[in-house]
Image 1: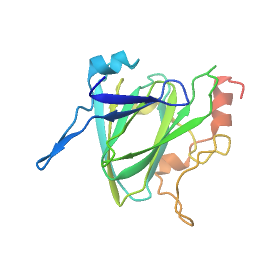
Image 2: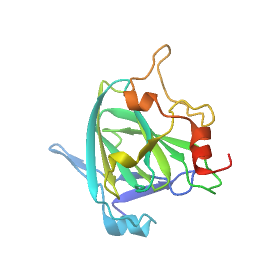
Image 3: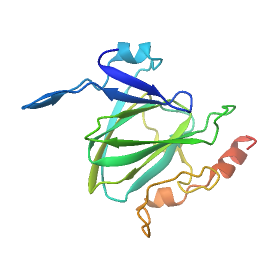
Image 4: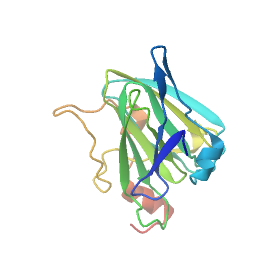
Amino acid sequence: MGQISVERCEIEGLRVITPQVFGDARGYFMETYHAAQFAAEGMDVRFVQDNESASARGVLRGLHFQNSFPQTKLVRVLEGEVFDVAVDLREGSPTFGQWQGVLLSGENHKQFYIPQGFAHGFYVLSDRAVFSYKCSDFYHPEDEGGIAFDDPKIGIRWPFPEGEEPLLSEKDRKWDGLEAYCAARGIRL
């Protein structure tokens, strides 16, 4: 495609996107989103909302999703480094309940494309991280759902330093695991 390279992940639908970076003594330039190039790679989506967050080392945000207003997300890190995770919650998917993790940083400029039907979260590895994401639907706080980040049924291998616990919001401490998610929706695990 010229401006981006797209790596297909083991879980169908997920993509790691690396933009071509043009740099010189003044700094750099890159295209982070180009609708025609994304569509040519099977990522034909209309984004309606951009979000940004800043987090300190050790913060874990997630695993989040929206129930009735699912979102496709295109996520990247502007500053710092995070371990970003998507969990497949698409009913009937051969990879249901499986996860994919990607290291995103302000240095590697990689982006993670996460289609509808996935829970999403990230863990901050640097002293500070600025995280940016495009969404295909608006945020509806009353529609938000989540899954416990440490559910052994999913088995995410978070890169926590030995002896350290992640910093979580009260909301993220209360999410149930995959089993409860499936029971509430009549999905056989």
